[in-house]
Image 1 (cartoon, rainbow, N blue to C red):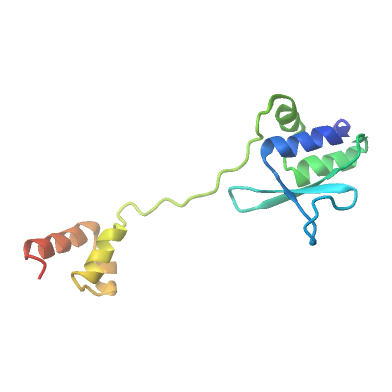
Image 2 (cartoon, rainbow, N blue to C red):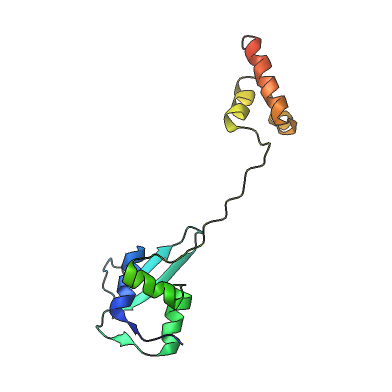
Length: 144
């Protein structure tokens, strides 16, 4: 079970990782008895947490577990490494699909459409080699 969580450690964590302090609808940053913070992950997911204005801590293990795992989405070890050593917790990198191996260069496609006046449907059926050959044929003909 997680150990008690001090409000100072919670605040230091969100500041160290670069969470953004959120204001109220009226623009105030002090809302009620908590500061609100958000963090946009590289995957597009947005995390949010509330940090108490108080100087004490949270002793209830269930609440501490909720804060760590659901709000901050970190392990207890990663939380304390961030607070005590400034080590940012591991976060998932966004999934970036690899471009198709034989995809056509955007500039080449644009030139085939605008200069060669080739229909898009025809370009879509070309292999990379055929598209390059069509562009080279256009250039060797003097642009006619």
